[in-house]
Amino acid sequence: MSASPSSSAQAAREALAERLGGLRREAELSGSELALRCGWSPSKSSRIERAKTPASDADIRAWCLACGAQDQIDDLIATNRQAEQMWVHWRKLHRHGMRRAQDEVVPLYRQTHHFRVYCSNLVPGMLQTEAYATALLSTIAAFQETPDDSTRAAAARVERSNVLHDGDRRFAFLVEETVLRYRIGDEGVMAGQLGYLLAVMALPNVSLGVVPFIANRRVWPLEAFYLFDRSQVSVELLTAAVNVTAPSEIATYAKAFSELAGMAVYGAAARSLISGAINSLG
Image (cartoon, rainbow, N blue to C red; front, side):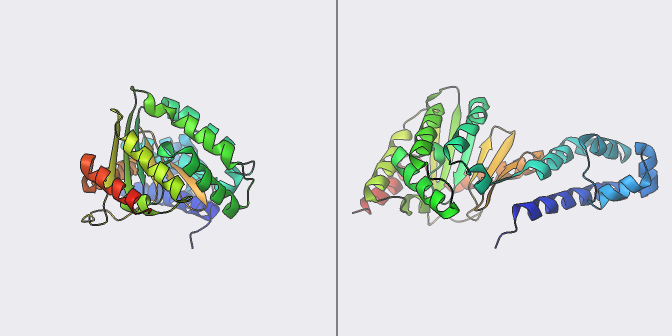
């Protein structure tokens, strides 16, 4: 069972504190010496390093400068902000229904020019038909015991996906072959969804790759994640959405995407897998 978002956020704070402590030790500074360089009390250094007091951006900047680790400032500040804001509980996000959650990400979609999306369990949201999205969102609402506005939310999701037709943006989608086989909705819904995947492959700014069952795995199937340019990664878990902004973690997801892309098939081979899934519907 996954840890709760709150406990995981505390774990992230403790990991940050350990990194700060590691910088101090690498610089061969005592807590008192570091405090003197930063201009604060030794007790503050101790509280930050033991994750008892959250460090501010200014604290992290001063700490890194005192340790001669200027190159770590941006990454640690991003990690600190992530620890405070990374977890968005699905139940909280969906407490008034799911339509609002669809609308809240529109500004992020509008400002992003390069989308990289990997999904191992579902058709990516931007590629979902309205019928598929309605079936999926209705199931989610029932599981979470939140208001079911799946019809309105699905319509908003499809409307949000109009960015696909903006030639100034680039989209790279990767799905596991399992996505083509999992039944969301009835056979008619799945046939329409798979047919839409074939159609969207023709868009000049869209790349759709399928990682086949028989691929030699260099990266295991992962949780769904969305890379928005190089500024943010959104990761979807069962209990929460995680927004990653630390540059080092974004780089890790970009590396994973690149490795998965190298295992995928495209063009005629991908269309063959999708057509095979359609034919299997009977």
